[in-house]
Length: 103
Image 1: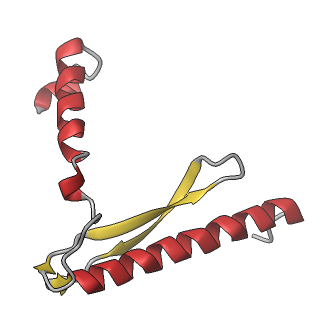
Image 2: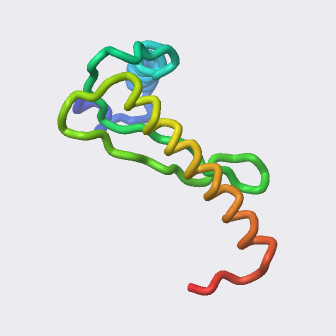
């Protein structure tokens, strides 16, 4: 891992970085199909806030509790993050269309 800091742009380091990133992108790390009764530890759930051009501009993140929770509770937290991000997306567009921000 110390190679990353010393040679972040060389080919072997980029290859290792890409392999590690690929491992993180597996669907087993995504809450796509939750067993509602299963107990699980949750680190965090996030949802993107989008800019006018559809790019992710910010993130709403909810930290998980320190104790295991059910799949139903994970799903509820995920929905809250998505709803909050959708509201922030609309709010950001309204602020931009309405003119200067008051802070």
